[in-house]
Structure formats: structure tokens, C-alpha cells
Length: 208
Image (tube, rainbow, N blue to C red):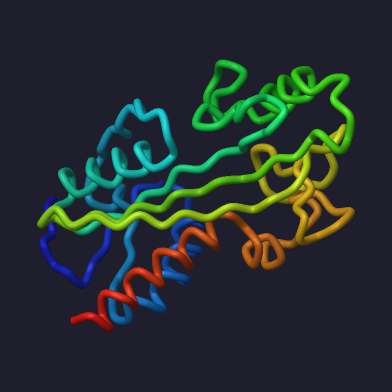
């Protein structure tokens, strides 16, 4: 079911929390726009993420959503980049151990790979890229990071992915999984990427 209205933006996710976060932040720069999960338009298959960078994968998903829905679309791609591992797991963060979304296996593999690496060399960052693609071909890409360290053992029950192992620089002594959702959203890589995208949208308005 295509919808060519510029008052609606499809969000290429089935995650309700991610949809709410994107709507809350981007809604400031796009007042009056309705944000809807692209799954509301039909039963579409997720595109294959063949990119070698977060930006490439975000654009793949956003472009696929535009083709499927006919609406302007937003998509994000994110992951953990560990300096001592030359950027791993990077774009393969969700499937680092071989099975997509197996958080326990991914965390276990990360700890094994970092075995013997001292604390001051365990620097890392979460990276997020958010792409906004319009049916007319216009594309904007916002980028954000959250700097920190990889711990030696998981702690906390909030969040997902590598959150139990990641110690953000902004919250000393606490893993991402020990933060409340509000605390996490205030410092997260996706928050910074969305803020960056908002700034680009505001700049376009000022230039118009």
C-alpha cells in the first residue's frame, strides 16, 4: 500500500521503542509529520544488509522502505567498534557470533577476543547512522557516537546487545545496561545521530 503523503514518514523498524525515540527527536525538526513503522504498510521482507559501513546499511534499509511504501523513510544502522580489535564487531555487531540477534553469544565472543587486553586498551564506541530518504531521491545521513570502554563482565538488566559490557564515558562506573531508559537515551549514539540529522533538517529550513 503506497502512500505519497509528505506528512507521513515510514520508519524501517519493527522495534516500538526505536520508533518512539525516532519520533520524539525527529518530530522536533518535522512538526506535524506522522512517523509509522513500515510494517504498517504491508508484510515486507527486510532487505539484505550488504554494506561495509553503517551508512551504507542505513541507506539500503531506508531506500528499500521508500520503494515499498512510497513514503519518505528513516532507517538506522548501529554497532560497537572496539579499538583493540581493529574496529570489530562493527557492522557485524548483531551477528558477530554467527546468529543474528544472539546477544549472549555475541557478548561471549567479544570477551574471548579481548581476553588478556588490559583495561586502558579496551576503548570502544557505539556508532549509529540514521538515514532519511525521500521518494524524489533526496538523502540525508546523521551520525552519532557514544564513547566508552568494554568491561570484563556483563552487568545490568536494561537494554540489549552489548549494553551489559559497555561502560559509557558519560556515566562513570555504570554499564549501559545499568542505566534507565531515560539516562541511556540522553547519551546514546542513536540520540546523537538523530540530533545531527535534526540539525541538517533545520539548516535546510533556514536556507529555504
